Length: 121
Image (cartoon, rainbow, N blue to C red; front, side):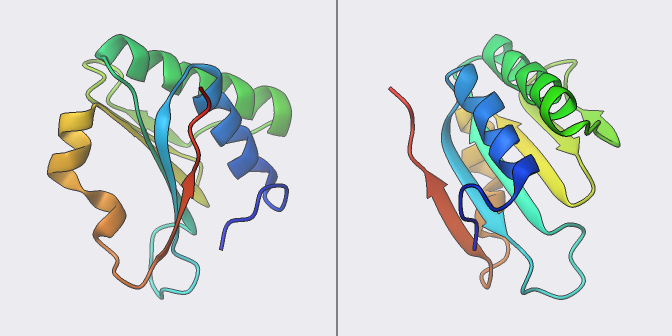
């Protein structure tokens, strides 16, 4: 289960999302599920392609500055409907609301523990 202050990269990713007013952040803890591609998903959304792009840039900047972490891959920046950022142990998904609802990836693993992060107003 995600607890603030216990995982520096997760905390930094959340800060990057909240800095640009990203919302509906969910941490999907996959650590108890065998053969997954990572330990955590961070899922969030922005209200427009411009905001989704800004959220991804903020996450990338903060992860590099605070943790020295660079993503192994980033996909989706071209249209910014869904941006995925692969930090090996953590994969960040930033969606437009309609894309997030359609793919509903936080519920693909029924056994995963979900932690909702309160929106900052």
